[in-house]
Each structure stands twice: as structure tokens, then as C-alpha cells.
Length: 208
Image 1 (tube, rainbow, N blue to C red):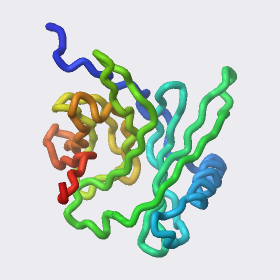
Image 2: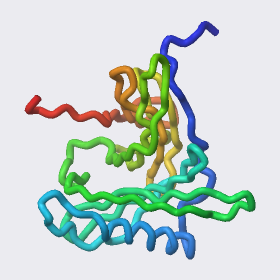
Image 3: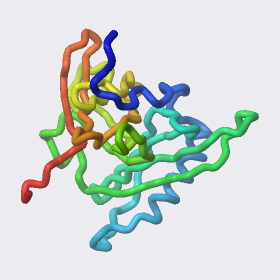
């Protein structure tokens, strides 16, 4: 195989290892996530409302930390999104919990043209050739269109991560983004390899 022209980290994260959180484990994670939600402040100081049931997404492990993304709709039509992450001690014990949350009023119900409902958060930096950097980005979501089986993250048409749909059609990716002028496209595929939907993480400002 000849050398690649697109040298960028690919499939850097471990695939999901566990079932979606439930029971006492879900309760522990929920307390941490809700605490982070309580610290969120909107730009206009409006009240985003009370979060409802938390939807957890598949775990992904990268750089020694496991990330469990989450979303929760509020009673005012907003949505909290974020994650709880943790490390593991040598004995396997979960340690060093961290929770991150933000809120948005851009929801799938308010955007019927969406094909994928996505959230994302930059969790690190990868250094490539000649000092170029990529934003290692945690991406999670659900398809709006049906019949999907697997989701890929692609950078300049190069697959840099993928995840099979879990319960409720949920998926999580950790992939390089914003590298050499290229940005992630999230693509939904059927079990037969048919492309069903594509969404970009980059949305150009119409005013620009």
C-alpha cells in the first residue's frame, strides 16, 4: 500500500465497551451531569428551564479517559448537552470524575430539515505535520432519518472514526476536526452500505 497523502490520526478512541448507563451507575452519572447543568448561564441570562430525563450515549475512551455524553430536554424547549468523563485506577476503580454541560435552543424539534441531531465538544488537540493541529472532538447524537446502522466521521472523505447505532439509535464519535482547512462530516449508513444522511459540524455564518 502506498503512503497516504492525508496523514491524520484515525480511529484514535476505543470502541464502546459497555451498555448504556442504567441503575445506580446512571444515578451517579446523572447527579454529576445535573450539577454541571445547574452551573450553565445563557448569554442573555434567560432561564433554560428544568432538565427532564437524561439520554445517555455510548461510551468512548481516548487519552486515558472515558467519555459518556448526555442530553436532556427542558420544560422551556431548550436542551442541555454535555458529558461526564472519568479515568480508571490501576485496580479498575473509576476515579477523577469531570462533568461538562451547556445549553441550546437549537433543537431537532425546531429544525425539521435536520437529518442528524448532533452535539459536539472539543476535548483535546492532536499535533500533525509542520505544526498543524486538529481539534479532537467528541460528537454524539441520533439520526432523524430511519434505517441507519452505523455512523462515520469523515475528514476530507477519509473515515477517521465510526460507531454502530446503539439503543435508541444513539452514537458517539471521537474524531479529528478542523485540520488543514478540512472539517468533519458526520455520515449515516445503512446496514447495506447505503449513504442515508450527511451533516457537517461546520455551519457557515450566512452574514459572512
